[in-house]
Length: 113
Length: 119
Image (cartoon, rainbow over all chains, first blue to last red; front, side):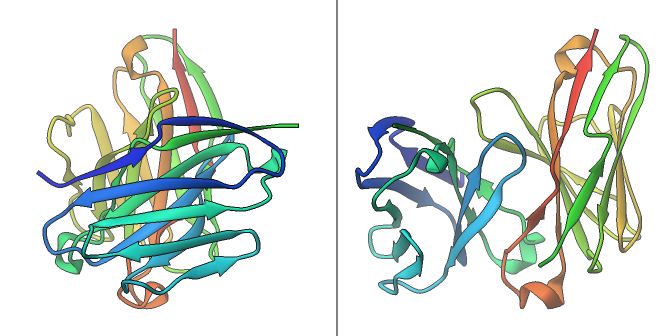
């Protein structure tokens, strides 16, 4: 059965800290891995990764995929209280499965002032 | 960027009634729409995948007669929770995907969600 596992499930840090969130997957015919940030409402897109070893960066956030280890990490440097959210990792199996995503349980990040 | 809206954002209803939730893609044509539900502090659980003009594909354990999905146009999908009960109370989120916009990738654009409370 395809599955996506995130760790840790929750994390509390102070402003200015750097955090690393983990996502591992067991998916038949992997195609892409996506990271989302969810605050009060629906998830907002952060990154999509398809190739191993290529870092994607957006401001203080960065992410990289390791297809050998079947995992990805999401790094947030110099955290701010506005980074507090649930971070979701999702994996897309092959296109002919309708483009559906399999989500991990999420990591709840809380950044204290 | 691609925008997806949902209506209503919040609904409270009595047990036994039916509730319809709309999901619209505002600036692109959604070839596929997905419906998820999310319980507090939990991840998104995919309920069904709908392609415009065809029947929805439901995930295992999701009752298709209970959760009716219609995707009549490229910009609108609806989820009707029939004979709602308190255990159906949840956060329902739709997402939309355009094959061409996504370039064959799996990027989905999410609506803001609908909070359903069944009394």
